[in-house]
Every structure is written in C-alpha cells, then in structure tokens.
Image (cartoon, rainbow, N blue to C red; front, side, top):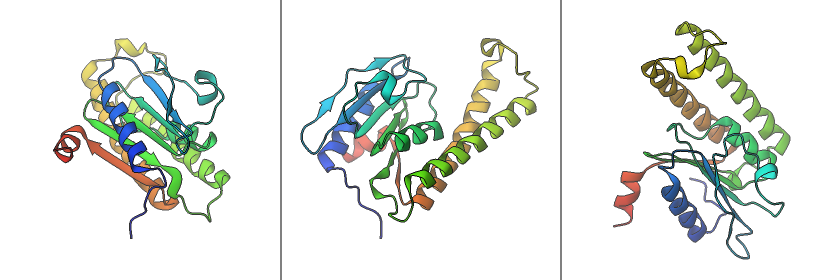
Length: 194
C-alpha cells in the first residue's frame, strides 16, 4: 500500500505551483512554506542562493517545506536531502524546466532515527562525490581546471550521468526510509490540471 503524505493536499498543491513559477529562473531560487498547520507563510525568494542553508538564508521560524530550483536541470541532490533532514524539513522540492523532484519525509519509517536518516543520506552523498570524481577522470579533466574552460558537450554528458545516478540514489533512499519520492514532468502536471 502506498504511503500517504501527512502534508495537507492544498499545501502540496501550493508548493507545486511555486516550483512551477521558479522552474526557469537562471539562478537558484529558494523559498520556504512554514507552519502549514496554522497558516501559509512564504519567505521571500532568495536569488542566487547556491550553497544556502536554512539557517543562513531564512529567518529562524519553523520551516515545513523548501521549494527551490536547479537551473542546471538536475534532480534533487543528496545534499538537499541532508539539509532537509538536518533541519526537520517535511518536504523539499527541486524544480527544473522539465519538472520537479521532491522528497516527502513525513512518511519515513518510525523505526528509523534522524541520525540513521542523516548517516544514510551522507553516505549516498559521498558516493555521489566519488561518482563525480570518476567522471572527471574518465573525461581526463584535471581538478584544477577552470569549470568554464570545459567543453559544454562534456559538461552536459557529465550532468546527465550525475542526474541518472542521483535519481537512483533518491529512489533507493526513499525505498529504504519510507519517504515519498516524486518525479513529475511539467507536461504531465499540465494534463492533470485539465
């Protein structure tokens, strides 16, 4: 039997609309929806917030959902998942021009502690870093090269490989933890609204 989110449906729909609004932004944007059991409070978007953390970027009030975009088109990262777990975020979205991926942590198995969730996500993130390093070696890219000097076709090829591997890590983490992993294409979302 599939898990059912503990986040109210209208809040999930609102967060999805926010993800759609920022999907084509050229720099990373991040917003939070907090205290959804009482009211919807949306933080101002933080533009160019690559490397943001919940504490550094947003005020100290409770966060229930983070919606942000990935201008490079990649899925939700394991670093995003680590942030969500560390700060008790209930759901995190990564929006791209093609759609969004999200992880709903309200359905994680009660038998798994926060420390176990963190340890598993950190391990998956480390595995992603090893995978990325192997891609650099396969492409004969030296670690000290300026990122902008790398051929864009090679960058695209590496991004695609990282995206596939990241997708598998997210699905594996969701299956293990009981979290709900979503992968929604905007074309499918538009059809569901008709």
